[in-house]
Length: 280
Image 1: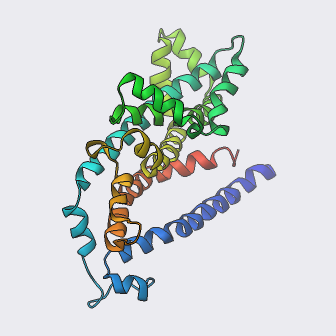
Image 2: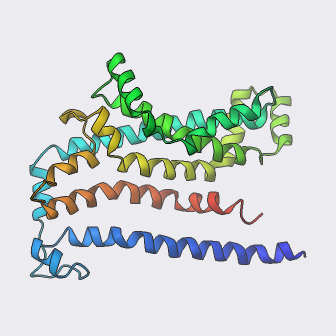
Image 3: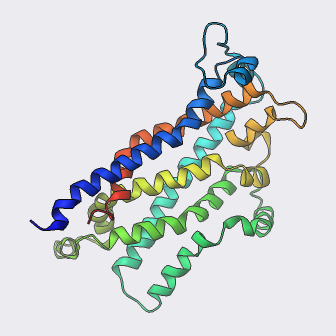
């Protein structure tokens, strides 16, 4: 057995341990937010690290969130925009990555670099042009505007990650599918996509978090009451002189829940996607 084969399990275990430790550290602020959302205002400032007790326990924050504003509507807007954006990013990103990794044509490398430019150039630099385009097309204050922007925002990273994974898919498997009469679409959906599920899960998680937590584009493109997202809707509890911290923490706790659920669902695939390239 080679040294590489002997050390792979050790390296894999070390990487998994590091990811678990990082997850615990990253989740500590989330834990504090959720714990303090069940406290009275005085307890939040006097003992922020303590669990809520009989004297400090309070649901006033959640009551305020549900009474003021349309938080359920904000939640639905965020969920709709995020799910549609992730679906489009995964679909178009995977198709572009498959074309770049499978077919050799003039300008292949240049096209790959062009699609990856979005990783280095933030999309917010084009906010004015984006807003002008949305105004011209009548998409301001619509969820469609947010879906289009977030899809464009997530595609560069999706293409970059998925193209690397798709190059590892066996050519013999794809050629066998062609011999059996499968079309290129069938090869893509039936043979290639199932083999890159860890990478798809990684892209989905990394795409969801910036979309769900974004405040900039909802504030610019969809500030109307009917199209507000959770992050933007939570700002109604933050004032220039007075901030309702109970409501803010409660709104943030509710907003965190979908991200945690998605992470728990895709955590195994996410770790596989992150570590697969490191243990080869």
